Image 1 (cartoon, rainbow, N blue to C red):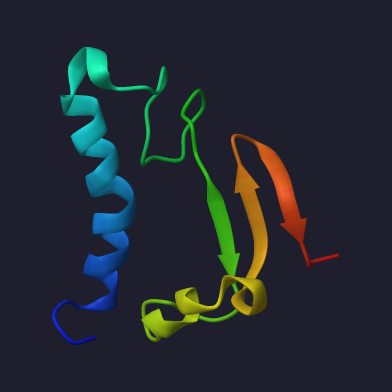
Image 2 (image 1 turned 180 degrees about the vertical axis):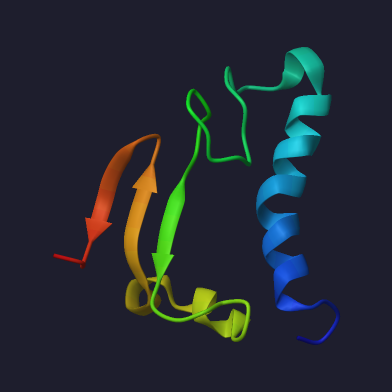
Length: 81
């Protein structure tokens, strides 16, 4: 990665953004915790074909590399059977 390690890019795009929303108080549009995988939290999950910690470029082509996409507990794409 040019400026950041892949783990840092993924952290900024997920849990760090969730922390910023939480700090926005009444402006936070989400009624449950974000950026964590736990009961009651709002979690969007992706299953990636490969390890984005080793190759961050995998997230550049979600149509090809995202095998499962789940948002708000609903599966929108599932190529794993």
